[in-house]
Image 1 (cartoon, rainbow, N blue to C red):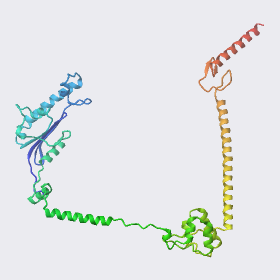
Image 2 (image 1 turned 180 degrees about the horizontal axis):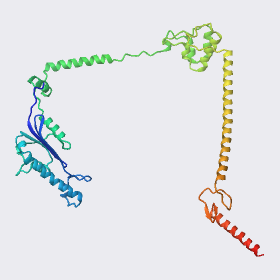
Image 3 (image 1 turned 120 degrees about the vertical axis):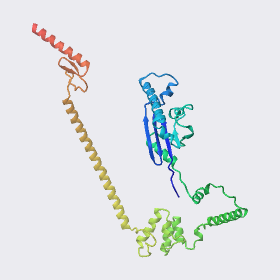
Image 4 (image 1 turned 180 degrees about the vertical axis):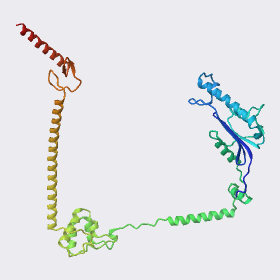
Length: 376
């Protein structure tokens, strides 16, 4: 049971990646708090500008801005820790910090010139996210929350962590005896009882009709049925003879016998389907012939329909081809439709360069003939 909560006077400060956040708390309330952000981290390459400068001197507008940001961050943190918050930090019992070893001097100063007494400084025992007031406040609540409990509650909570007392020899023997007894009970429960194998020759209810049916002997089973063998009799496994029929031929033999002897036995109890007679067989064959006839007619109709569709499609394609040819520009030499970019000469259009040359010679010949005819 929780009895009370402490209300310490502590400070929490965090510095990382150009972000500073700090606050002085008294109980649940923040006496003062501050958050600062300066541009010090290289966006694409990562790392601080100071770490990059340790390897080589970088000259760029971005690097100059980051150097200025680092300088301003150091000045602002120093001013905050040594001047603006000096009174509040001096009255704190403890100062919890979250900072890397490289940035420790920026937040706490050096050994010669510390910003706060080193005896008050404690490192937070867990990592923080980007320093903000909310993150700092959550860290304070985690380290400042101390629970007091009654002695009985503490004993109940710590009982499982205490060393276990060694059992006595009598207790060990009793435990072993109980374990052995349980093992015997489990083995007895899991003991597999022998399964009795079924054999037809040992089954008193297994009739000769069962045997003839199982053997597929059509003549024998018909003879037995004629002699009055009961097809409803069940063997030791509850099976009627018809159930043992190995193929359709034997099943049809039962059905034909039923068709001619419908009133002789209880065929429903014998699990034999409707009987087969000459009339039913004739009807079945007629149905099969009708079915084959309808199938043939459907195939013929489908073939005729496919032929008609093919003819209609060919006719439609021929009409489209003729319409396309009529709509296309035709060559002035060979009169064929021009299906690609035409070749032009004067006001004429041609399909190939050969047609251009041939038509040119034709026009020149016609012009020469006109000149000769005019002079004559």
